[in-house]
Length: 232
Ligand SMILES: *Cc1c(COP(=O)(O)O)cnc(C)c1O
Image (cartoon, rainbow, N blue to C red):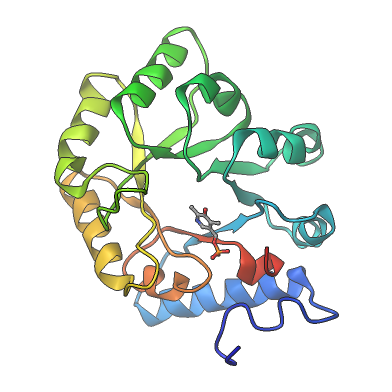
């Protein structure tokens, strides 16, 4: 592995996730400053599949925003620990089935993967029944990959409009996962453009390999897993 790989040292003896987190935070701040930004993007530490002994030091170091891919796994990892960390913020960054909406809104503070009418409707119905809805992001499939979740970019404006007017949802921002092996910049630029014309100001984009690029393109939160916790 090259020295510039975000995964370097991940499996080396003595790898310390708290130190890795501090380094990532410094790089986020430097990238933001370098881009002339006055705000500081949020680090979402993606804890999916990680052992608790890698997560605990990061919590102790002050990290409070975590990303998880699966409802069940996140419940197992976090449900009983929530009360110890009242300022914890859990974000669902993986696909959500409509039959798991009830569990998801009970656990997560943010759902970043709203991507279809059936899900928007299920969220709206839960809200109408009195559930407190999490903050919501619409996922956009910027690379138009058939196997990937997310709204097609050409349909994003209409979907955001329906989420707001038809389902009465408050959309906070947009999220994307660029295709593997492609330059991420154009995908981040596309997501930012869709956000701008829809009056959205929160952008969840960038992972271990490209979070600094995402910050330059306006990410307000970056989702970093292996570069914080080590290889999965
Ligand atoms: C796993 C995952 C991440 C983190 O990926 P790393 O490359 O480990 O940083 C970010 N976003 C989503 C949606 C993921 O599923």
